[in-house]
Image (tube, rainbow, N blue to C red):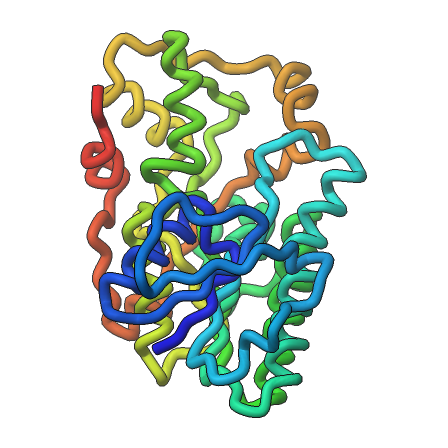
Length: 299
């Protein structure tokens, strides 16, 4: 197939692009910066899809399109940056749907990123895809994001929105924690012990491939490991694997200074289960946090 991957030069996008190329597909990466590798079936178009239309009518004669564009949320949330978080997701999705609408020979499937932040703070509740939209900034962004993606169904395209939990792997959240841990401590953002949903980098890539290949799958899908854990247990697992580190609780004022308005939402309780993936027969490579962390340990 010929597959457009918007945001394909990022952490997950790079992994997914390499897997698609390894399966024999042709991949067109649309991003603001080029991939860090080359391949005979890899093509790159530089464009900021959140602020510009897709050039060259690239969705014409394309079999599938995947959108992974989204500004990082683990930065200080000023009003300006909150708008950046929203626009990078919603506007890029609207741009892709506009490209689908303009094409005569359209993709058969559009896979759009989303996030488990859709559910907001759910406390002790076990959450699956039937759970309603929560409250808060991230929940509202995810709802708009998915609404924009679903409009592609009006053009006969199968749409899958993948609500992804925080990703544990060689990049992303774990890489940042490991960088901080090099100073001898692992930061705890809250004294509370909320539920923590997560997924390994390999499993989230597999979830996108599964959505691509499973023609009966459409709508929303939780990409989260089947065993959410308590936040303190997650940190303790890191400590057990990263020897000689201390777990240090950040004062709330320091965490708020670092993350701004995002502090409270980044410490929300999230007990999400991947019911639809499991019902469809998806197999997790790393179903437990211990198995997800150990393959990435290099110390």
